[in-house]
Image 1 (spheres, rainbow, N blue to C red):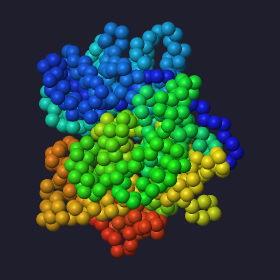
Image 2: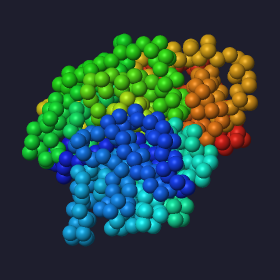
Image 3: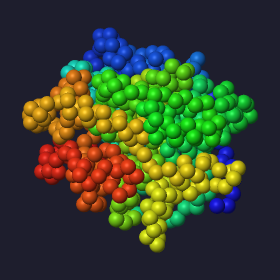
Image 4: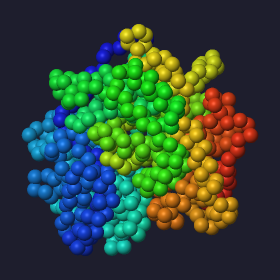
Length: 612
């Protein structure tokens, strides 16, 4: 490919960034009477924000905030307020283009708005004051976020969540008539009569009592097949800009490195830009100029070996953590409590990630970048080799993107935040997605125009396949076959869980599973094990169960993609080893497993996944 201009870091500045936990109660008869209840509920989120606590408690409203300070840790406490404290904002997340938004706001309203903190999140407050409740529709807000905003002057409030659902948010209704919002359902499980996951990409306003989409991406309609080609240079530069925009930090940070393509590309770009502070456009040396990388796996696992090779190539300070199957099994109950799911795929992958997060926090690192989203955008899962045509391929891309909040985003956020570590996901940057989801799908497919097979995510690999000193990664890493995280940490991890579940769950329990769990009935002993642990924390068939994604899947596919190949039937397991003829260590033809929905189209809708 022709040389590309070096990616220029976006404008940045030191800001009071904070990942955190938020809890809000609206419509109380007397907020002060519920303060103790709110404090206790907010404590259940303190793992998300162990650095400081803040609370607004007045009239009929409580907004509580548990802070994890990443940038400018000595200020930026929340909730945030306007000049007379009549507007209150509680935010969980990062607004990456806050300086750009400030400049645009100043152009529209010269001298009208004064910023009182260094927080990137204060721009949300100012945009509300300028543009009203629909400010998210009027401005291009790039970031990952969930927030609540209360306007005391109008007795009015709104809540919103980013388009992909990188940041979790739940909404509930208490027996006192209050409307509740929380970063995790555990905070409102006991105080809400009913609750649900807040839909990604939506804003709720109390005046209309409705949730509406504030932004519709160009790629949102999966039936609209993109056909405009992209140059490798354009794709490479777009992703490099995204990674750079995610590097702002005043605390030690690192990268999750599995040795697969996605995390290795993130690490490679980070290693090129970590010597200088992006906050000052590279004018000052970085506080921590050498990149730290982290990997986890069973002794001798594929990921550990590959991550070691990438670290040596990039010269990162590498931290390799080992766990045993027994340590993973011992952690399952805690993992399910923090992840708030019983989805088989998610728990398999979350357990080693949860264990690693604890070690990362012990090292002093509070923020990491990770590679989630690339497989959904570029069709990286091995079952994509079976996509019959470009239209089906792109439709599955869009379905998987819309499901991320139920699976990979939930895992990355909650597994890391269980130990107070923030995970940022540059593949899911708003602007990068607009680039990567709107070019010719044929460039992503696992066959070229002549029908010759090629490796999954071919176009992404080729975009970073540069010669000599310009190389981002060794070619054997750049073209390494996709290995799902739960497989890559060591194949015996999944096998150990299945063996444990086989011994732990009786045949009699499986016979009566329909009766005990009529909502999203587990069909395998492994699924039953997880559901039983989930019930211990959140009840048998409560609102919590309805928030969990539930669908038949092979190697992380949607239910729709199961129809692509007859060989997929009866092999609906999350492991990539189920994709016979593609995975280099696939299960043989005798492997069968019970589907979550047992293939029954007539099964109640409550047992099926929420996919929108």
